Amino acid sequence: MGFLSSAILPGVLIGVLIYGMVKKVDVFDCFLSGASQGIKTSFSVLPALVALMTMVAMLRASGFFDLLAGILAPFTQAVGLPGELLPLAVLRPISGSGALAMFQSLLGQYGPDSTIGRMASVMMGSTETTFYTIAVYYSCTAVKIKKTHQTLPAALTADLTGFLMSVLTVRMLLGN
Image (tube, rainbow, N blue to C red; front, side, top):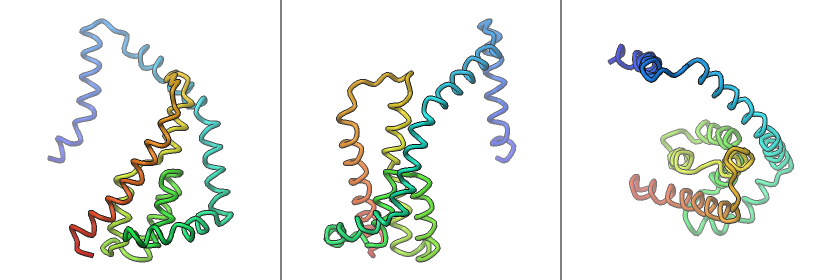
């Protein structure tokens, strides 16, 4: 099994080269063209990403997430979401790296086999960094998406559903 898994990537690359030779395609030229487009796309997305990361850092440093957690505590208690998970639920749609740091902190504090650790794990796997994804896709000029007004409400609803189902699933399957 070890040899097979380590041979997959070189096999795919060799297959692409052989297919290109059979179809008489200049594979190296196509590679260079794709790499050039990738660099252009990266530069077009960079300003939106810098703005997003700056905003997340400012919100964390200002205590906004703690304030929001306090305001939403009655709702989270009603649905069975432990208050310790609320900062993760608020941060996850905004910042993947911030949510990962929060997740690691929760696992370090409560352990991966605790109810909080399990709920946090399911939340991380069943939700998306919504604002990051929107910033990347909509700032890319190649995509040319025009009608964006329904994206954010739909995506945030999906995230909320993911958070609530994470709590429900862990409670149902593990009885906590």
